[in-house]
Length: 218
Ligand code: DX5
Ligand code: ZN
Image (cartoon, rainbow, N blue to C red; front, top):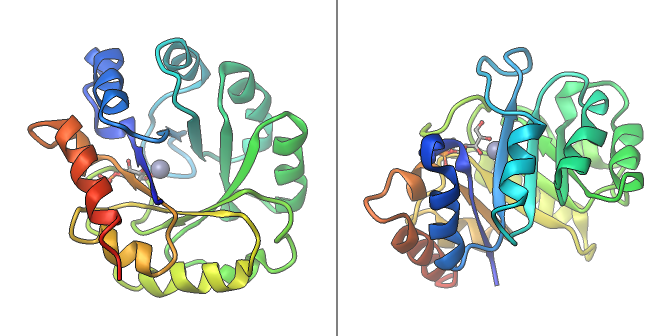
């Protein structure tokens, strides 16, 4: 069954605890936390203190998406703050294998993110070093952008490359109820959605709609 991961980037940050409680009660599987540094991407969001605060308010696994340069410097702090999965961008540094190993050694699941223009072949020699691939379907930096259709083929290519490995394929950016079944058909196992959930009139209902749409595949 596909997993639904609300991205808190589009939540009301002044009422974050309440917003998280709503999506948790509606059956969200995990929370997606976008960390931006104003260097890897042209936006700045949150750091480990916010992850620590969220950790105290929810039982959901926290999937921390680092859109930062030199992610290896901050992995220990995010794991200590309560991240269950730490995802780093392939494009953020030259030593991907080392960084993925560092995440696992620190006790978290390791994720690897690909920008829309990045070919999945960059993963060919690290296939046993991560637990999640995050296929970016928008250029990272902002919520509410439009899904880039070319990334659909990449979801399938990633799934094929992984073979039978028990690795999650997550899609992040511009995910809507309409796209959900198509993404699952192409091999997505987790759907990240920010604006489709938190900008909806009823975020709890939006989680449920995404879930039923994602189960309508085939
Ligand atoms: C974009 C972030 C996404 C973002 C998705 O850089 O990585 O997680 O929150 O937001 P939507 O679903 O609105 O595209
Ligand atoms: Zn993200």
